[in-house]
Length: 317
Image (cartoon, rainbow, N blue to C red; front, side):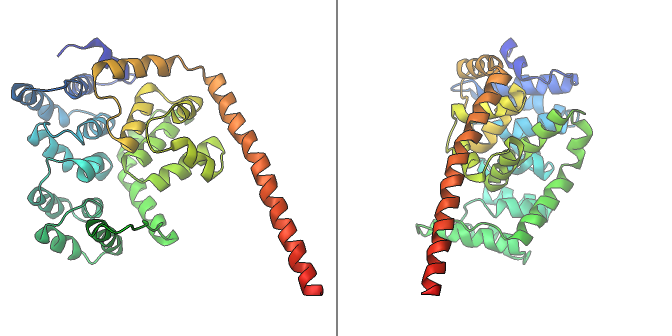
């Protein structure tokens, strides 16, 4: 599988030979429309031995890229699913290859952090649900309650996590990402890229909205509109304005929306178009979004002042 274009997503600051081989082989496999069984076997034979040598960053990319493929090599999926939670989360949430028995075994081997992610996956298997409930963990119980409503077909609004739950989740994420920080680029941009990628791949949309709003200095509502519900130009421009690499942008989009580039041509076009975005022009676009926020804030403030004035008149009269 010799596709030079796949090297475009390679870390330009360098990387091990194992990283290069694993990234190229995973991306090549994902771009094959109808891979044969021999293709899957070839990927498994090459990739599984490389996992022990590859960096967390590249293993995380592999898990995200394979998370929705029904024809991925099962042994590779299982190996990645039992990796650290910041690497395995996307697979635990989405992979169609992981059976209830597989998930139960993973919970038994890996414990609470993996169980919390698996609890957010829809499942009606009684043994798996019983195993998850045995933790008597608030986060797991809340996730199972939400999934039970979805299973009944109810129009249920997912509640936002409480401050205490969110704080605990963020603490766990920081602990899980300590290994990644050793490999992070020393620049502020490198640290920011890792931070946003982690929030996207851990499937915490609310967390990603907050992190993007903070990075761009936007209101949460504006950041939510920029993210949207699928691959869009506004989010790509926002990521480019922050100086993120094509690899980081690709990982964020994959974490948020699944496999947005499902063939070689679309992946190549994305890389080329992303690198052609001028960062200063992208920043100017973000500045226009900020300017658009001001009239909205002013109108809201005037409405609040008018309401306060009217309430005051009523009290006096």
